[in-house]
Length: 145
Image (cartoon, rainbow, N blue to C red; front, side, top):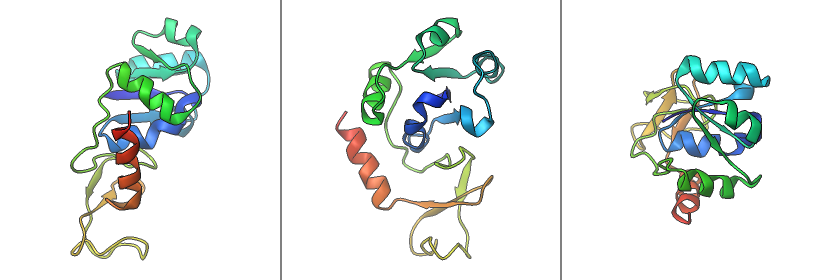
């Protein structure tokens, strides 16, 4: 699902990306103006996710969230029909939303050796990812919804 998250719901962006969603974040795009957000959502065919009821009513396709708590926002997204199943293989960078590909050696010192543990690298920002303790915590959070 292609999503555009406004500035009030950025706390769920990495979770959505770990579930395979193309989740663009307004501040990453330098967009805060409501008219520009709406135009961007239309141009890119994205569902707008927001806490702003007036903005949600103006959008062609929107999910309106009520809470400020990220875990509760995930619960609301789940209730709205957004699939919150962790992807078998991550496809999106949790930091920048760029596409991931399997990492090849050499990797940065913070990342495991890709020959010993499956590791992915963002084609946009170069950050490496693997299914470590963060993945397990996110799985627990999503499993509790």
